[in-house]
Length: 495
Image (cartoon, rainbow, N blue to C red; front, side, top):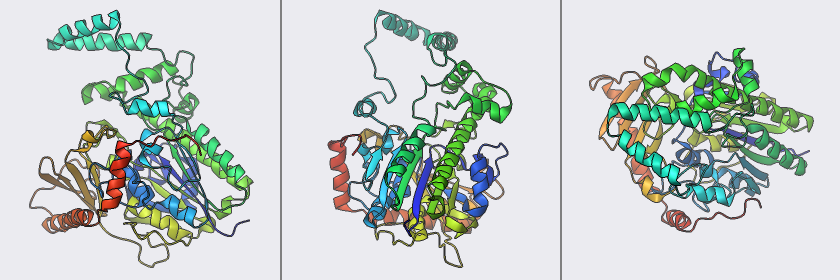
């Protein structure tokens, strides 16, 4: 048996910090993680360094801010130092299984550093995302029925009343004839492989590598919209069943362009679907742990579980996670790290950036992080843990970064310490300061004359962040990224 500790990093797309039991959520969606937390290191105020996915993962896997190479660079840069590369250089077997998220594909260099990499995406699926329409279906030329619907829609949109009636009639038509869930299951409407499939692939790989020390990254998409969990999990959480047709209806209704007032009556049911998806992830994490125990690997394996961003359910009037705000519902994520034999355990209440996650994991197994990493270890062995204000950034309104033109918007930046958060919108030229201790839901920004010293201090942190990004921008790396944009590297799906 190897004497070195192996490491598993599990990232769960869209998992909010306040929807796990070990951080206070009342609904029992994460019993396995809740049981693991007392013997683990729990970060109560973990925040992402960017949101959504394409702005979050450069910090998680390469310990650098997402806009460090410029707003037009998305994903990892070919050849840049990464967590996987550090483990592979140390002799670890490395593998990644990412559940069909196109922004975590070979196209954006996420395969680098891994001996085995499966993004569950075919070249054809990636090509659809590179087109004008981002989604699971390619556009088809409209037939005569489509042309009639287009003409009628154009007429109906001329007046508010007819527009509302037309939209409602069309929604009901789609719901009635659109299919999905008719066989009593949700298998035909899921956009991503569920956690049991992805964890199963990871377990197959673990069975093949024998006793080698390993680094394994698993990314799960179950809590990502549309929310289609195993329906039995809904009954487990609520005591009441939900039909597949009802789940399909809720997801389609939730995606409509309606006011928050019209959406709100269905909010609780939609959150139940989301929570059931989180519960399904927890079940698969327990399956992973049990398999490691059976193979005699659990006691020499570090398990870290976190998320790339949260999800909004009308908290501030919005849904999903578009990059137009940096509220806690979107940037606050759970982070629990279980070290063998409880080597490091307890609760860290200070704010912690996922920029520091990769150095912390390497530190936990006694490896030095690459010199280019911008983050620092959480101070596992230090008497005083890491404590500093942290930054979160994105390009405002960049909802489809597949095309470079979509990345040209203004920067949105948040600087957060354990109590306060400053948000700077470079597009509108404004700033807002929140006292999260007294206003955790960010309902009312402080006045300009309130907490002046704190505002000045966080503005200085923001200024240093921007200056540092400009100073450390690596010309050669940026050039490699731009070339990769011009010549997409779809490559084979599996090594």
